[in-house]
Image (cartoon, rainbow, N blue to C red; front, side, top):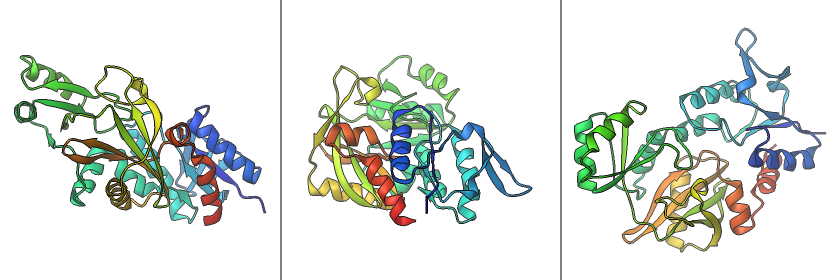
Amino acid sequence: MQKKIAIIGIPGKWSTEILADAIEKRTGFRLVIDMAQVKLDLSCTRLFYQGVDLSSLDALIIKKISAEYNPNTLDRLELLRILSAQGIPVFSDPEKILRLIDRLSCTISLRNANIPMPATTITEDITLAADTIKTYQHAVLKPLYSTKARGMMLLDGDDPQLLDKIQSYQQQHPMLYIQQQVTLPGYDLGLVFLAGKYLGAYARVNQSNTWNTTINSGGKYAAHSPNQAIIQMAQKAQDIFTLDFTTVDVAETEHGAIVFEVSAFGGFKGALEGINIDAASLYSDYVLQQL
């Protein structure tokens, strides 16, 4: 019997479409759902997309919930909890993803599990924020909702305009998330996990003079073989959230390896271009096995 599995993502985007391709190849069914066009009708407790009752599907896979993270992303995940409550399998579980969309929530979960991370301070007080940055000497202000280093600001403790810059930043980001800048060896890592099983690791290699290695800033993917201690650290970090598919962002520093974050959705392109792993196909096979 044909399984009807829909992909929640961004129509037209590579990672969404390649996952939809993989599912269609295996089931003959294709449906890409844009959450901006979903309707929840609580009178009948049903979620609809372009006239399709999503509770009629066999499963859904969340590849991307919005183009950029913001509080509205959390609202979209809340809508999907309706399906989970009705017994419709959603990969990964919306409640588990909710803990990762907010950078602060992810950070606290990682620190509570004693996962090594960069020195980090969170405050709403501008003076305390400035004192922290002076102590760190070089720091990064990070939005609570962002991906690929969007909205991040690098600040120096001796900047005479430090208070003004923090105050300006706080107008958009009331809760100030301050992380000490770490010196990278020209790359950082993405360790890929499917159902908690380690698949491999790729590096994002800096190709420019930017302070970060993201692909948005010109970074390139490459193969990498981390040592067993790094793999175990990433394994422990992703175990906290028990996602069906994820990537753990890791950096090797002069003081040892640290975790930046656990991805809510995981990266297909890094796995494919960096280590030739077809994550979309592996993920599709996994979902079908679970059904």
